[in-house]
Length: 565
Image (cartoon, rainbow, N blue to C red; front, side, top):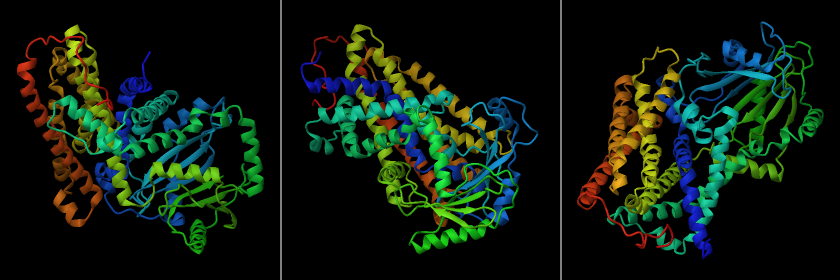
């Protein structure tokens, strides 16, 4: 089929990258935003604009907050769908949990309830999740959408397609294809060092796009490879679920053996018992961590078999002082506060897995690495976007001469996925500041407006890419860049008007979570406005040559694919 191996790699790089590049664009963009998900949360919910707090007192604040978490109508409906019989008026309480990070001003809490007579014995719990102000223990409104951690972050790995985990499967396939595209790109590029320093912005669009595609692909190659591979490893158990299918009996037997070995009861005793002071258990855990020279911040706290004689309390360290994702958990008997055990050092396999997971999720405390993660994700976006542009520019004259619509279709999808996605993101930030605070189901409105804005961007992209069929530059790119600039500036202005936290104030106070979001929005507006100006200038320069039908010889020598220059 191909005369050389490099040509076959070029074909695979082009078509694999094109077909799933639209998914990868969303994955990279929302992955970049997820680096600062907690900061975006604070921007979106002004009531949470205070400094991050440590894990609060369980005895004084958390236990009352947990007892307020009761099953909702939606939770009961979910439990009913998982049970084979009628449900009692009150579901049996099983678990409490609280989680925070060094960037969280608020605390995430949850209560787990048992489902009687479950259809699947391994799916016998339902959960109620809430958000608590750790300073007072008071619950925060549940209908406020945490744009960063509850919308942008899940979009990164699931695309919000939850039916049978379809989104995760699509993202996994895209990550696998990305690894193949990276390898094929390296095979195609014979002059990696030269392309690292080559960018000719004043050349024609096709040449400039190829230069920028090569540059961003080469500069961030290790970053892109690491993130694609680590993402696949993190979800390996979902893609290959042998632990919950073929090996389920062995898994259950292992769980019982571990419970006997470690002293952590796998089941409730059925004997009511009160809970000893959890604050004293936390203090003992911190003392033990300090004895090992570790930071003593508590990241997660759980209570299993609540109100039972077999209750256990597990205290996990935040672990922000290292890359590897590990909690050094210390486990206590709930009724007495006696230490049962400390987590053993992980095996080599577990240690490698924890390191790879921690490297991807970046829970560590290191601001410079966080900036580099953000920049690496945006470099991936630029690499993919310029790949789309190069594909269209290379083929639009041939397609115009033959009356084919292929280039227009790709261009419309590219506009939707690149500028349309950014415009929808800026639009949801504007909606976040415009919607009334007391609006019922406010978070649902924000999500709906995001999808509506993205659909509108697609309709506009399809309408305004018609000139590509005459081998001209589509005005949709410049017009959506203008929309991005306007929406980004509007979001900054509306934040200042509706909250009083204008940029001068947040910079003077050093409150970087809100100031940082505003600065990034203004930078986005400046880049979008500059891009719109540049695109319109190029469109005017190309107008005389592209105003009429362009006769193209089908035998003309085409521009080489990436890496063939």
